[in-house]
Amino acid sequence: MNVPRIKKFLSEVKQGVIPKTIWLYDEVGSNDDAKREIKRLFDKVTFDTPKPPSLIERILQISTNKNSIILDSFAGSGTTAHAVLNLNKKDGGKRKFICIEMEDYAETITAERVKRVIKGYGTAEATKGNFDFFKLGQPMFLDDGNLNELVGIEKIRQYVYYTETKTPLTETKHKDNKHFLGKNNDTAYYFHYEQDEVTTLDHAFLATMKTKAEQYVIYADNCLLTKDFMTKHHIIFKKIPRDITRF
Image (cartoon, rainbow, N blue to C red; front, side, top):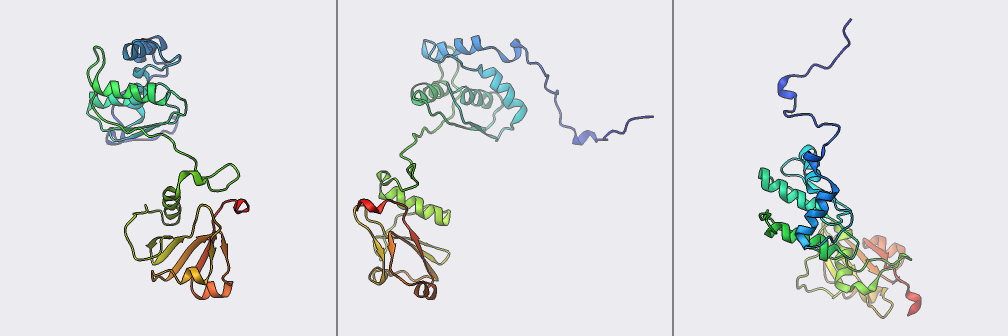
């Protein structure tokens, strides 16, 4: 008796050779090759455990297409970015990479390597391409869950508005009070905040609001409005997460 098997038409079968279980040195290189590559890039070995770009290229050939976005959360010396740029140059791909590195060599080694690969180094031709380099700023919240006010009012306002609406805050001139963030889906958002004093949502603050909306979301330190009043006027109060005892 024959064993049941799945029947596939030729048009449904992916073309190419099935990857081997073992990748040999002449296919994917070695750590020694990776160290020599680093030395060619920086004239010295600046990283103890680099991976060979040829190994990552092989992985990308199997696991990505020409328009993939590749994420490397532990970028190290930047081998993944190097491999993506090499592979794009070889097959005309438009792959993109996101590399994250928390160590202090992120700029001097990781990002610098990507720059040199793009421009060309030693006998290696330029791959061309581009990338953006960003440094992680202050955390928005402290370990105790309170707002980190050192990030600055503009960053806080942007964060609050995006959290509420999932749209970026566009700072434009308006005729409302300075605490107005914006209006989205007929909801007006206010961030009633002062760095060195406690703020209160009360009738006096409401009198300064000029934007007409179906609903109002207002951040402040305290609220003196009654629940019935807020329900009637479609007002949602949200307490600003910060330690107001220091005031």
